[in-house]
Length: 177
Image 1: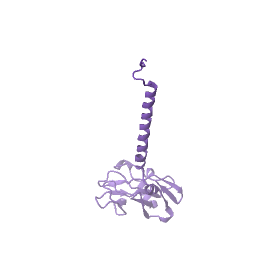
Image 2 (image 1 turned 90 degrees about the vertical axis):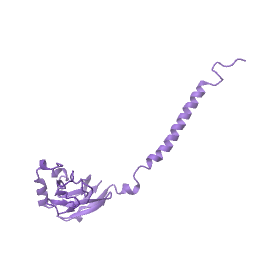
Image 3 (image 1 turned 45 degrees about the vertical axis):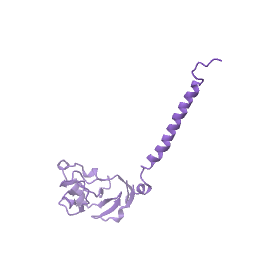
Image 4 (image 1 turned 30 degrees about the horizontal axis):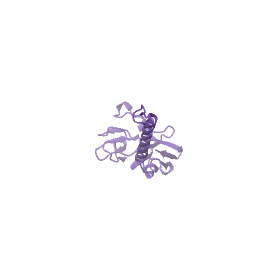
């Protein structure tokens, strides 16, 4: 009997199938390992629950400010007076370190409400309201002063107080985040 010409009696189609099956098995095993590893990097359910909050603005009277905890940070919800709004609009934007108009920092039709993340942009301190020269917030740690729109006016802070993403659900209710 003569020996087959393909060198040892193995069918080349069978060898290709074994390679493809082994590769598919390895890809499947890699996916089985990767899915839980990537899944564990997602935020936990308790973190997602804090990702957005709703706040009733009727709790804040004109000229007052409420501080709400959001994502582990203080959130300032301020009901500004007509004078505070006028002072904020009267500022020459070109003179600001981080130029933004008051209209860019509030929602149209709801200019009386200012929503800010209450963390100083210098070193992360929490500024106090009403003690600064500009009628806004003052950071006692290093002397940064913000105006009635939360814009940096004086001191070492490089940027304005951050305005988070928020929307009005009604005239008296906002959703932050």
